[in-house]
Length: 78
Image (cartoon, rainbow, N blue to C red; front, side, top):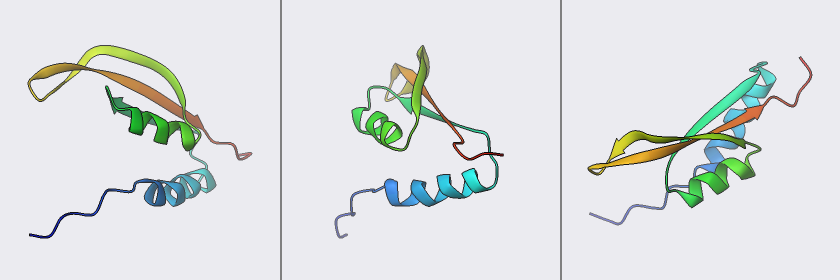
């Protein structure tokens, strides 16, 4: 089986966010399982702001994990 290409989310998210802005969606929310510096940097680069962290909210690979919450407000007038 050939190696998989690395996942590049930015080309997917930019048009999606633009479409949601145009549709009048007021607020977008993202949740990141921690630790994940790359995902937090992605959210930051897409205009999201860190709004909080919940401790031991999830369960992954046999461990309890924290999750950070990110929010982006629609910059277009509606």
